[in-house]
Length: 399
DNA sequence: AAGCGGTGCAACCGCGTCTCC
DNA sequence: TGGAGACGCGGTTGCACCGCT
Image (tube, rainbow, N blue to C red; front, side, top):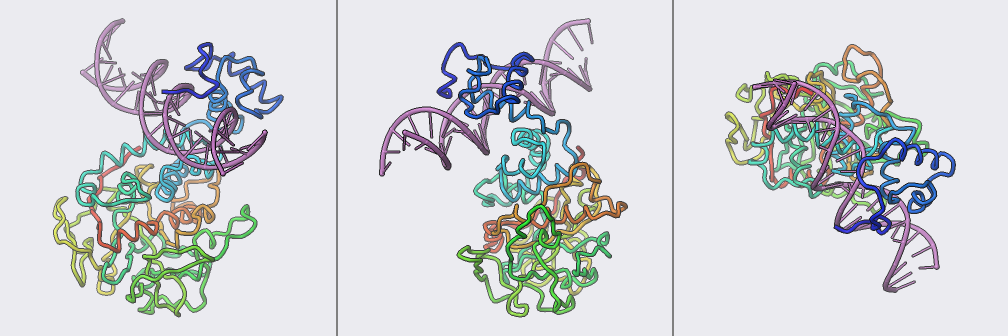
């Protein structure tokens, strides 16, 4: 267990910081800035190593830190970002003003991950090959957080649950959701664009990964994913989602379905044996009885016949909150920097899932959700049939 | 009231990356 | 170009606190 070079001295204090040490560090950095961290303890009169000073300042003494419990919005954002980025706590923390990577990491490990682990069994047992950014636990989380992504392996289509009725009337700019036709829930994405140069001006349409398309017709059948197989798409020299099917829609735009939310699952009302909650339909079907997977291949939902054939998906914010209200998830190519489409979550805003709160915070969360869908690697796993969905969910994930 | 276990968080550790010479 | 030091990050540990018995 080697120490940082400046920490080798036996005279260096370790362990908890005393108020006096804190004061010294605050005074020094307030007056001079930290500059070279290795020099800070010397000039500040601290018997600490520079690394320890840096950690103490960043994680505890910084004046812009927001202490206290994580809000549901922050928790939801952490969950979503973790699904996107994996355990990149520093990057996640950058999206949470006033929070440190250590804080986010601790919150994840103590509060969120526990809940996922407590509800892991079937998902792990059923889908041992799931990898998400090379981290099996992240894959596990993705499965649990979004347990109802259904991919038609034959058509290379990723079926995502439809929006909940709560979203009726929810207007994403020019995008109109049509609840009664699953095809209408496939949102069309034009070719990805660069984010606005002024990142401070949040454009919900950009964050959602799409722009209004005047030719969008929610009733057109071919708004499903193309059956022509996976198509590679590039932005510049960047490969975008090699396993994501290119939809045959006006020969160009990406079509991505919206994801609904699983009130029933979260609330414990989900019954996998109920027909409308199955993922049944044409093609091979996966069914669960209790927690056992019945049938070897991927379900193909038949949404045309029964618009209620809607797999549900948990809403992370609701998971944290212990209650649930619906909202949509949208999907865009995640090979773009997902954070480029993520706004900073407004601090102290109202809980955006509250359907009674008529503000546009829903869009923030939608932006988050839109970025939380599987990465290309996950989609590859989906398309190769490596895993499917286990509808068994905890009856309650109270905070 | 005391013991015990669980929980949350501050801090440490090791390693990868960056920067400078 | 390579080496050394500094920095940043993710994983882990240890301890204080709290609730339960």
